[in-house]
Image (cartoon, rainbow, N blue to C red; front, side):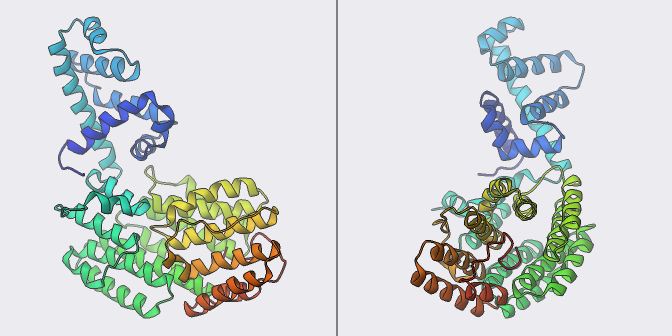
Length: 433
Protein backbone atom coordinates (compact mmCIF):
# COMPACT_ATOMS: atom_id res chain seq x y z
CA UNK A 1 0.00 0.00 0.00
CA UNK A 2 1.22 3.51 -0.76
CA UNK A 3 1.51 5.79 2.24
CA UNK A 4 2.06 9.51 2.58
CA UNK A 5 4.89 11.33 4.34
CA UNK A 6 8.11 9.49 5.04
CA UNK A 7 6.45 6.06 5.15
CA UNK A 8 6.98 5.06 1.54
CA UNK A 9 10.64 6.11 1.20
CA UNK A 10 11.44 4.64 4.63
CA UNK A 11 9.94 1.34 3.61
CA UNK A 12 11.88 1.42 0.35
CA UNK A 13 15.18 2.31 2.04
CA UNK A 14 14.84 -0.66 4.40
CA UNK A 15 14.00 -2.94 1.49
CA UNK A 16 16.85 -1.70 -0.73
CA UNK A 17 19.41 -2.06 2.03
CA UNK A 18 18.25 -5.62 2.63
CA UNK A 19 18.87 -6.32 -1.08
CA UNK A 20 22.52 -5.27 -0.86
CA UNK A 21 23.26 -8.90 0.03
CA UNK A 22 21.46 -9.99 -3.16
CA UNK A 23 23.21 -8.04 -5.95
CA UNK A 24 21.21 -9.57 -8.80
CA UNK A 25 17.87 -8.81 -7.13
CA UNK A 26 19.07 -5.29 -6.32
CA UNK A 27 20.00 -4.59 -9.95
CA UNK A 28 16.56 -5.73 -11.12
CA UNK A 29 14.57 -3.80 -8.53
CA UNK A 30 12.51 -1.00 -10.16
CA UNK A 31 13.16 1.54 -7.40
CA UNK A 32 16.88 0.71 -7.43
CA UNK A 33 16.90 1.18 -11.20
CA UNK A 34 15.21 4.56 -10.79
CA UNK A 35 17.75 5.59 -8.16
CA UNK A 36 20.69 4.38 -10.24
CA UNK A 37 19.55 6.34 -13.26
CA UNK A 38 18.63 9.42 -11.23
CA UNK A 39 22.18 9.52 -9.83
CA UNK A 40 23.80 8.44 -13.12
CA UNK A 41 25.58 5.48 -11.52
CA UNK A 42 26.98 2.37 -13.14
CA UNK A 43 25.10 0.01 -10.85
CA UNK A 44 22.52 -0.01 -8.07
CA UNK A 45 24.98 -0.56 -5.24
CA UNK A 46 26.96 2.50 -6.28
CA UNK A 47 23.70 4.46 -6.36
CA UNK A 48 22.92 3.43 -2.80
CA UNK A 49 26.41 4.41 -1.71
CA UNK A 50 25.94 7.82 -3.37
CA UNK A 51 22.61 8.18 -1.56
CA UNK A 52 24.37 7.50 1.74
CA UNK A 53 26.97 10.16 0.93
CA UNK A 54 24.20 12.67 0.17
CA UNK A 55 22.22 11.83 3.30
CA UNK A 56 25.18 12.29 5.63
CA UNK A 57 27.16 15.02 3.90
CA UNK A 58 27.04 17.12 7.05
CA UNK A 59 30.36 17.15 8.89
CA UNK A 60 28.72 16.78 12.31
CA UNK A 61 29.71 13.94 14.60
CA UNK A 62 26.13 12.68 14.69
CA UNK A 63 26.03 12.40 10.88
CA UNK A 64 29.32 10.52 11.00
CA UNK A 65 27.97 8.00 13.48
CA UNK A 66 24.79 7.48 11.48
CA UNK A 67 26.74 7.01 8.26
CA UNK A 68 29.07 4.47 9.88
CA UNK A 69 26.10 2.49 11.16
CA UNK A 70 24.62 2.21 7.66
CA UNK A 71 27.95 1.34 6.03
CA UNK A 72 28.95 -1.25 8.62
CA UNK A 73 25.55 -2.87 9.08
CA UNK A 74 24.11 -2.77 5.59
CA UNK A 75 27.08 -2.74 3.23
CA UNK A 76 29.60 -4.74 5.26
CA UNK A 77 26.86 -6.88 6.87
CA UNK A 78 28.23 -6.66 10.40
CA UNK A 79 26.04 -7.47 13.40
CA UNK A 80 24.41 -4.82 15.58
CA UNK A 81 26.43 -5.97 18.58
CA UNK A 82 29.73 -5.77 16.66
CA UNK A 83 28.98 -2.31 15.26
CA UNK A 84 27.80 -0.87 18.57
CA UNK A 85 30.99 -2.07 20.24
CA UNK A 86 33.16 -0.68 17.45
CA UNK A 87 31.47 2.74 17.70
CA UNK A 88 31.51 2.68 21.52
CA UNK A 89 27.72 2.80 21.76
CA UNK A 90 25.32 0.96 24.00
CA UNK A 91 22.77 -1.11 22.11
CA UNK A 92 20.12 1.38 23.12
CA UNK A 93 22.16 4.24 21.66
CA UNK A 94 22.94 2.18 18.57
CA UNK A 95 19.28 1.55 17.74
CA UNK A 96 18.37 5.18 18.34
CA UNK A 97 21.08 6.29 15.92
CA UNK A 98 20.03 3.61 13.41
CA UNK A 99 16.43 4.81 13.36
CA UNK A 100 17.63 8.37 12.70
CA UNK A 101 20.04 7.12 10.03
CA UNK A 102 17.28 5.29 8.16
CA UNK A 103 15.02 8.35 8.35
CA UNK A 104 17.81 10.51 6.91
CA UNK A 105 18.28 8.07 4.05
CA UNK A 106 14.53 8.03 3.43
CA UNK A 107 14.47 11.82 3.17
CA UNK A 108 17.40 11.70 0.77
CA UNK A 109 15.64 9.10 -1.39
CA UNK A 110 12.47 11.18 -1.41
CA UNK A 111 14.48 14.23 -2.49
CA UNK A 112 16.28 12.46 -5.33
CA UNK A 113 13.10 10.98 -6.75
CA UNK A 114 11.14 14.22 -6.51
CA UNK A 115 13.87 16.17 -8.33
CA UNK A 116 13.49 13.76 -11.23
CA UNK A 117 9.67 13.91 -11.19
CA UNK A 118 9.23 10.42 -9.78
CA UNK A 119 6.21 10.53 -7.49
CA UNK A 120 6.72 8.13 -4.57
CA UNK A 121 3.03 8.12 -3.69
CA UNK A 122 2.09 6.61 -7.05
CA UNK A 123 5.23 4.90 -8.36
CA UNK A 124 4.60 1.39 -7.09
CA UNK A 125 0.91 1.00 -7.76
CA UNK A 126 0.91 2.80 -11.11
CA UNK A 127 3.97 0.88 -12.33
CA UNK A 128 2.44 -2.39 -11.18
CA UNK A 129 -0.86 -1.52 -12.89
CA UNK A 130 1.06 -1.22 -16.16
CA UNK A 131 2.82 -4.59 -15.83
CA UNK A 132 0.66 -6.81 -13.60
CA UNK A 133 -2.78 -5.24 -13.13
CA UNK A 134 -4.21 -8.38 -11.53
CA UNK A 135 -1.87 -7.89 -8.57
CA UNK A 136 -3.16 -4.34 -8.07
CA UNK A 137 -6.72 -5.58 -8.22
CA UNK A 138 -5.79 -8.18 -5.61
CA UNK A 139 -4.43 -5.50 -3.28
CA UNK A 140 -7.86 -3.85 -3.18
CA UNK A 141 -9.93 -7.00 -3.08
CA UNK A 142 -12.42 -6.59 -0.26
CA UNK A 143 -11.59 -2.95 0.47
CA UNK A 144 -12.03 0.43 -1.16
CA UNK A 145 -9.23 2.58 -2.52
CA UNK A 146 -9.16 5.61 -0.24
CA UNK A 147 -6.47 7.87 -1.67
CA UNK A 148 -6.81 9.59 -5.03
CA UNK A 149 -3.59 7.91 -6.20
CA UNK A 150 -4.96 4.51 -5.20
CA UNK A 151 -8.26 5.12 -6.99
CA UNK A 152 -6.42 6.13 -10.15
CA UNK A 153 -4.07 3.13 -10.07
CA UNK A 154 -7.03 0.82 -9.49
CA UNK A 155 -8.85 2.29 -12.50
CA UNK A 156 -5.76 1.84 -14.69
CA UNK A 157 -5.47 -1.75 -13.46
CA UNK A 158 -9.10 -2.46 -14.39
CA UNK A 159 -8.56 -1.14 -17.92
CA UNK A 160 -5.26 -2.98 -18.34
CA UNK A 161 -6.78 -6.23 -17.03
CA UNK A 162 -9.46 -5.99 -19.77
CA UNK A 163 -12.16 -5.49 -17.15
CA UNK A 164 -15.25 -3.33 -17.81
CA UNK A 165 -14.57 0.39 -17.44
CA UNK A 166 -16.98 2.88 -18.98
CA UNK A 167 -16.18 6.40 -20.09
CA UNK A 168 -18.53 7.75 -17.41
CA UNK A 169 -16.38 5.98 -14.77
CA UNK A 170 -13.70 8.59 -15.49
CA UNK A 171 -16.06 11.40 -14.47
CA UNK A 172 -15.34 10.91 -10.77
CA UNK A 173 -11.66 11.82 -11.16
CA UNK A 174 -9.93 15.21 -11.34
CA UNK A 175 -9.72 16.59 -14.88
CA UNK A 176 -6.16 15.42 -15.59
CA UNK A 177 -6.59 11.91 -14.17
CA UNK A 178 -9.97 11.52 -15.88
CA UNK A 179 -8.48 12.55 -19.23
CA UNK A 180 -5.63 10.06 -18.83
CA UNK A 181 -8.15 7.31 -18.12
CA UNK A 182 -10.08 8.28 -21.24
CA UNK A 183 -6.87 8.02 -23.25
CA UNK A 184 -6.33 4.55 -21.77
CA UNK A 185 -9.83 3.65 -22.95
CA UNK A 186 -8.93 5.11 -26.34
CA UNK A 187 -6.07 2.61 -26.48
CA UNK A 188 -8.63 -0.16 -26.04
CA UNK A 189 -10.82 1.30 -28.80
CA UNK A 190 -7.77 1.44 -31.09
CA UNK A 191 -7.19 -2.30 -30.67
CA UNK A 192 -10.55 -2.95 -32.29
CA UNK A 193 -10.34 -0.19 -34.90
CA UNK A 194 -13.19 1.71 -33.22
CA UNK A 195 -12.74 5.09 -34.89
CA UNK A 196 -15.91 6.52 -33.35
CA UNK A 197 -14.77 5.61 -29.86
CA UNK A 198 -11.35 7.15 -30.48
CA UNK A 199 -12.93 10.37 -31.80
CA UNK A 200 -15.24 10.56 -28.80
CA UNK A 201 -12.55 10.19 -26.13
CA UNK A 202 -10.12 12.53 -27.89
CA UNK A 203 -12.88 15.19 -27.99
CA UNK A 204 -13.43 14.68 -24.25
CA UNK A 205 -9.69 14.99 -23.61
CA UNK A 206 -9.49 18.20 -25.62
CA UNK A 207 -12.34 19.61 -23.52
CA UNK A 208 -10.46 18.70 -20.32
CA UNK A 209 -7.29 20.38 -21.59
CA UNK A 210 -9.03 23.78 -21.44
CA UNK A 211 -9.29 23.41 -17.66
CA UNK A 212 -5.63 22.60 -17.07
CA UNK A 213 -2.28 24.37 -16.89
CA UNK A 214 -0.05 24.35 -19.97
CA UNK A 215 2.25 21.51 -18.85
CA UNK A 216 -0.67 19.19 -18.10
CA UNK A 217 -2.48 20.17 -21.31
CA UNK A 218 0.63 19.41 -23.37
CA UNK A 219 0.96 16.00 -21.69
CA UNK A 220 -2.61 15.20 -22.73
CA UNK A 221 -2.05 16.53 -26.25
CA UNK A 222 0.96 14.21 -26.42
CA UNK A 223 -1.27 11.28 -25.45
CA UNK A 224 -3.85 12.19 -28.09
CA UNK A 225 -1.17 12.42 -30.78
CA UNK A 226 0.24 9.03 -29.86
CA UNK A 227 -3.17 7.38 -29.84
CA UNK A 228 -3.90 8.76 -33.32
CA UNK A 229 -0.39 7.82 -34.50
CA UNK A 230 -0.80 4.17 -33.50
CA UNK A 231 -4.27 3.99 -35.07
CA UNK A 232 -2.95 5.50 -38.32
CA UNK A 233 -0.12 2.96 -38.30
CA UNK A 234 -2.57 0.06 -38.15
CA UNK A 235 -4.70 1.63 -40.88
CA UNK A 236 -1.65 1.87 -43.15
CA UNK A 237 -1.73 5.67 -43.42
CA UNK A 238 1.95 6.58 -43.28
CA UNK A 239 1.38 10.29 -43.96
CA UNK A 240 -0.90 10.46 -40.90
CA UNK A 241 1.73 8.59 -38.88
CA UNK A 242 4.27 11.26 -39.85
CA UNK A 243 1.87 14.06 -38.96
CA UNK A 244 1.06 12.66 -35.52
CA UNK A 245 4.73 11.88 -34.85
CA UNK A 246 5.52 15.57 -35.44
CA UNK A 247 2.76 16.46 -33.00
CA UNK A 248 4.33 14.11 -30.45
CA UNK A 249 7.61 15.98 -30.74
CA UNK A 250 5.97 19.40 -30.38
CA UNK A 251 3.92 18.48 -27.34
CA UNK A 252 6.73 16.64 -25.56
CA UNK A 253 8.48 19.99 -25.11
CA UNK A 254 7.11 21.67 -22.03
CA UNK A 255 4.83 18.79 -21.04
CA UNK A 256 4.59 17.36 -17.55
CA UNK A 257 7.09 14.49 -17.44
CA UNK A 258 8.80 16.00 -20.48
CA UNK A 259 11.99 13.88 -20.25
CA UNK A 260 10.15 10.59 -20.74
CA UNK A 261 7.99 12.09 -23.46
CA UNK A 262 10.96 13.51 -25.33
CA UNK A 263 12.62 10.11 -25.34
CA UNK A 264 9.41 8.42 -26.50
CA UNK A 265 8.95 10.96 -29.30
CA UNK A 266 12.52 10.30 -30.43
CA UNK A 267 11.83 6.57 -30.55
CA UNK A 268 8.68 7.29 -32.60
CA UNK A 269 10.80 9.25 -35.11
CA UNK A 270 13.14 6.27 -35.39
CA UNK A 271 10.18 3.95 -36.01
CA UNK A 272 8.80 6.26 -38.69
CA UNK A 273 12.14 6.23 -40.51
CA UNK A 274 12.30 2.45 -40.24
CA UNK A 275 8.83 2.28 -41.80
CA UNK A 276 10.13 4.45 -44.64
CA UNK A 277 12.94 1.91 -45.13
CA UNK A 278 15.59 4.40 -44.03
CA UNK A 279 17.60 2.21 -41.63
CA UNK A 280 20.60 4.52 -41.26
CA UNK A 281 18.41 7.48 -40.36
CA UNK A 282 16.35 5.30 -38.02
CA UNK A 283 19.47 4.09 -36.23
CA UNK A 284 20.71 7.67 -35.83
CA UNK A 285 17.34 8.85 -34.46
CA UNK A 286 17.12 5.97 -31.98
CA UNK A 287 20.68 6.54 -30.80
CA UNK A 288 19.87 10.21 -30.20
CA UNK A 289 16.68 9.31 -28.32
CA UNK A 290 18.46 6.86 -26.04
CA UNK A 291 21.43 9.18 -25.49
CA UNK A 292 19.13 11.95 -24.29
CA UNK A 293 17.06 9.54 -22.21
CA UNK A 294 15.65 10.69 -18.87
CA UNK A 295 17.41 9.49 -15.79
CA UNK A 296 14.21 7.74 -14.75
CA UNK A 297 12.84 5.62 -17.58
CA UNK A 298 9.24 4.52 -17.31
CA UNK A 299 8.10 1.10 -18.46
CA UNK A 300 5.87 2.47 -21.24
CA UNK A 301 8.94 4.14 -22.76
CA UNK A 302 11.28 1.20 -22.28
CA UNK A 303 9.05 -1.42 -23.90
CA UNK A 304 8.56 0.77 -26.96
CA UNK A 305 12.29 1.51 -27.22
CA UNK A 306 13.09 -2.20 -26.86
CA UNK A 307 10.71 -3.03 -29.71
CA UNK A 308 12.09 -0.45 -32.15
CA UNK A 309 15.66 -1.42 -31.25
CA UNK A 310 14.76 -5.06 -31.92
CA UNK A 311 13.34 -4.14 -35.34
CA UNK A 312 16.56 -2.33 -36.24
CA UNK A 313 18.75 -5.15 -34.93
CA UNK A 314 16.76 -7.66 -36.97
CA UNK A 315 17.15 -5.48 -40.07
CA UNK A 316 20.89 -5.31 -39.43
CA UNK A 317 21.07 -9.11 -39.26
CA UNK A 318 21.65 -9.49 -35.51
CA UNK A 319 18.71 -11.79 -34.92
CA UNK A 320 19.99 -13.15 -31.61
CA UNK A 321 20.11 -9.67 -30.07
CA UNK A 322 16.73 -8.82 -31.59
CA UNK A 323 15.11 -11.87 -30.03
CA UNK A 324 16.64 -11.07 -26.67
CA UNK A 325 15.20 -7.54 -26.82
CA UNK A 326 11.79 -8.83 -27.85
CA UNK A 327 11.50 -10.69 -24.57
CA UNK A 328 11.21 -7.29 -22.89
CA UNK A 329 8.24 -6.36 -25.05
CA UNK A 330 6.26 -9.12 -23.35
CA UNK A 331 5.97 -6.72 -20.41
CA UNK A 332 3.79 -4.51 -22.60
CA UNK A 333 0.81 -6.87 -22.71
CA UNK A 334 -1.20 -4.89 -20.14
CA UNK A 335 -0.31 -1.28 -20.96
CA UNK A 336 0.51 -1.54 -24.70
CA UNK A 337 -1.01 -4.65 -26.32
CA UNK A 338 -0.02 -3.24 -29.72
CA UNK A 339 3.68 -3.36 -28.79
CA UNK A 340 3.20 -6.80 -27.24
CA UNK A 341 1.51 -8.13 -30.36
CA UNK A 342 4.01 -6.66 -32.77
CA UNK A 343 6.84 -8.01 -30.62
CA UNK A 344 5.29 -11.48 -30.63
CA UNK A 345 4.86 -11.33 -34.40
CA UNK A 346 8.49 -10.37 -34.94
CA UNK A 347 9.60 -13.18 -32.60
CA UNK A 348 7.60 -15.57 -34.76
CA UNK A 349 9.10 -14.24 -37.98
CA UNK A 350 12.64 -14.56 -36.65
CA UNK A 351 11.93 -18.13 -35.51
CA UNK A 352 10.55 -18.88 -38.98
CA UNK A 353 13.69 -17.55 -40.59
CA UNK A 354 15.81 -19.67 -38.27
CA UNK A 355 13.78 -22.77 -39.07
CA UNK A 356 12.62 -23.06 -35.46
CA UNK A 357 9.17 -23.96 -34.19
CA UNK A 358 7.11 -21.22 -32.56
CA UNK A 359 3.56 -20.55 -31.46
CA UNK A 360 1.81 -17.59 -29.83
CA UNK A 361 2.23 -17.28 -26.07
CA UNK A 362 -0.68 -18.60 -24.04
CA UNK A 363 -0.58 -15.64 -21.66
CA UNK A 364 -2.84 -13.09 -23.45
CA UNK A 365 -6.57 -13.13 -22.66
CA UNK A 366 -8.86 -14.46 -25.37
CA UNK A 367 -9.98 -10.91 -26.11
CA UNK A 368 -6.49 -10.09 -27.36
CA UNK A 369 -6.84 -12.44 -30.34
CA UNK A 370 -9.85 -10.56 -31.70
CA UNK A 371 -7.84 -7.33 -31.89
CA UNK A 372 -5.71 -6.03 -34.74
CA UNK A 373 -2.56 -7.23 -33.06
CA UNK A 374 -3.93 -10.64 -32.16
CA UNK A 375 -4.72 -11.01 -35.85
CA UNK A 376 -1.13 -10.09 -36.72
CA UNK A 377 0.23 -12.73 -34.34
CA UNK A 378 -2.09 -15.36 -35.78
CA UNK A 379 -1.09 -14.40 -39.32
CA UNK A 380 2.50 -15.22 -38.44
CA UNK A 381 1.42 -18.41 -36.75
CA UNK A 382 -0.37 -19.51 -39.93
CA UNK A 383 3.00 -19.42 -41.72
CA UNK A 384 4.50 -21.67 -39.05
CA UNK A 385 1.62 -24.10 -39.37
CA UNK A 386 2.19 -24.20 -43.13
CA UNK A 387 5.88 -24.93 -42.59
CA UNK A 388 4.91 -27.78 -40.27
CA UNK A 389 2.76 -29.35 -42.97
CA UNK A 390 -0.57 -28.40 -41.41
CA UNK A 391 -1.95 -26.72 -44.49
CA UNK A 392 -5.66 -26.89 -43.62
CA UNK A 393 -5.14 -25.59 -40.11
CA UNK A 394 -2.92 -22.82 -41.48
CA UNK A 395 -5.72 -21.80 -43.86
CA UNK A 396 -8.28 -21.64 -41.05
CA UNK A 397 -5.99 -19.57 -38.81
CA UNK A 398 -5.07 -17.22 -41.67
CA UNK A 399 -8.73 -16.75 -42.66
CA UNK A 400 -9.71 -15.99 -39.06
CA UNK A 401 -6.85 -13.50 -38.76
CA UNK A 402 -7.80 -11.78 -42.00
CA UNK A 403 -11.44 -11.53 -40.94
CA UNK A 404 -10.49 -9.93 -37.62
CA UNK A 405 -8.07 -7.55 -39.33
CA UNK A 406 -10.69 -6.48 -41.86
CA UNK A 407 -13.25 -5.97 -39.11
CA UNK A 408 -10.82 -3.79 -37.14
CA UNK A 409 -9.79 -1.69 -40.17
CA UNK A 410 -6.23 -3.00 -40.38
CA UNK A 411 -5.82 -3.57 -44.15
CA UNK A 412 -2.10 -4.35 -44.12
CA UNK A 413 -2.59 -7.10 -41.55
CA UNK A 414 -5.54 -8.47 -43.52
CA UNK A 415 -3.49 -8.60 -46.71
CA UNK A 416 -0.59 -10.20 -44.87
CA UNK A 417 -2.88 -12.87 -43.42
CA UNK A 418 -4.41 -13.61 -46.83
CA UNK A 419 -0.93 -14.06 -48.30
CA UNK A 420 0.08 -16.70 -45.75
CA UNK A 421 1.04 -19.17 -48.48
CA UNK A 422 3.87 -16.96 -49.64
CA UNK A 423 7.10 -18.53 -48.47
CA UNK A 424 8.83 -15.16 -48.26
CA UNK A 425 10.95 -15.14 -45.12
CA UNK A 426 12.20 -11.61 -44.94
CA UNK A 427 12.47 -10.50 -41.35
CA UNK A 428 10.39 -7.40 -41.97
CA UNK A 429 7.81 -9.12 -44.13
CA UNK A 430 4.85 -8.47 -41.85
CA UNK A 431 3.08 -5.11 -41.95
CA UNK A 432 4.49 -2.11 -40.11
CA UNK A 433 7.29 -4.03 -38.39
